[in-house]
Length: 165
Ligand SMILES: Cc1cc2nc3c(=O)[nH]c(=O)nc-3n(C[C@H](O)[C@H](O)[C@H](O)COP(=O)(O)O)c2cc1C
Image 1 (cartoon, protein in one colour):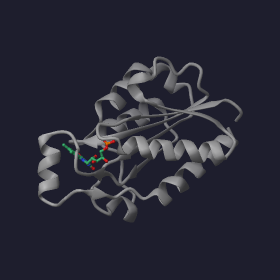
Image 2: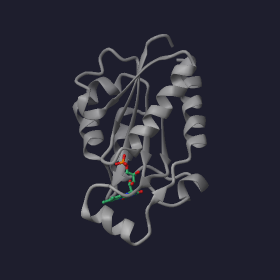
Image 3: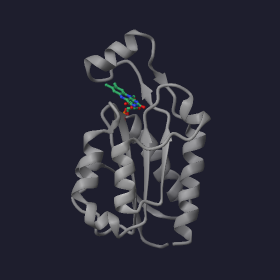
Image 4: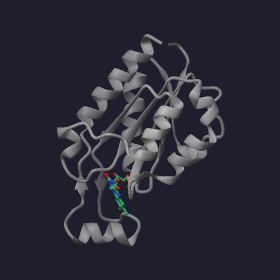
């Protein structure tokens, strides 16, 4: 594929953005033209030839900007190669096994005929927004569970698929 890839994300505390930037870097190194943007800043996907969308998980759903992005661009996304990723679990589970998409994301996958979905570990550190976040941190359940090797491996696989698109 020779066109432009959009890597977009819904984040509240910034960790999903870093995952998206890592994915974008891998795709660029593979020779693709890539834009990495927050989901709420994308007004149209018409100029992109493929899209990767990620959302941080909050109470069993994608972060709101990622959800709204799928709704707003439903029609154009359904016509493009599409990959989805979630970022959430605050333990090693995402590195140990495949974690299926949450129901809302599963539904979108089917409706949009997405190529694939993957769940990466999440990250919650001091300074995170909201009282629930502060409570989790106070209980010692925070930390950074993102596996950047796994993220890069997945991105390389997406690049490989795009090469054959
Ligand atoms: C209020 C709150 C609710 C959360 N709910 C979930 C959840 O349902 N499932 C999950 O796997 N992780 C959950 N997490 C962990 C977040 O998904 C994780 O911190 C993620 O990396 C956040 O992404 P962001 O930094 O891009 O906003 C929750 C975290 C908070 C603070």
